[in-house]
Image 1 (tube, rainbow, N blue to C red):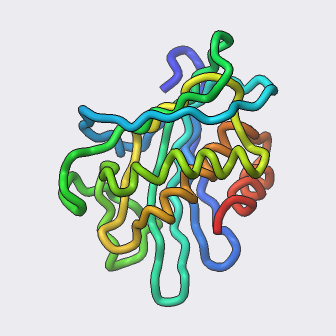
Image 2: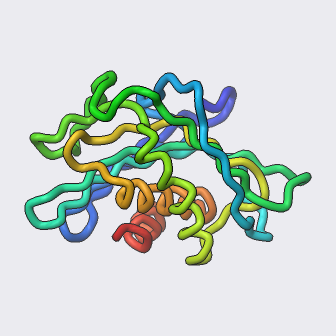
Length: 191
């Protein structure tokens, strides 16, 4: 929570094609996880100034009988002394499916969300950030730290976490002033 700033805000979006999203501005919704290791990478940064911000995005995307699920959150801090965007992705060392349950009203049964980010999903995050940059959405030079996540035992894949990272990066770089702006940003980046 931003000390002395506005209270965190959570927005629920009913998207097209039965997709659903919850977005937290300035908060991680109880999906922090123990991490002693991280992946690090560098991505080109935009020349426009991006303000510091923490965002978490939870997304459910049906694909016929299969449903993708995931939550990814991070903290962006600009740095005038950098020329690139450093991406630090903390991951959990527990086996896939092992960990504290994450209660989600948008996850579709029989999904069982688990707080954490296994290495096999964390590997896709940097590629998702690069994808967003390629599509014109990149924060200014600074550091993006991914430290909030939940995944589904059935509906999470590296491909889906790559997509989540792309949406998260777009949200951090674009900002929004209304729910329709937020909806458009998510719809533009969700596969």
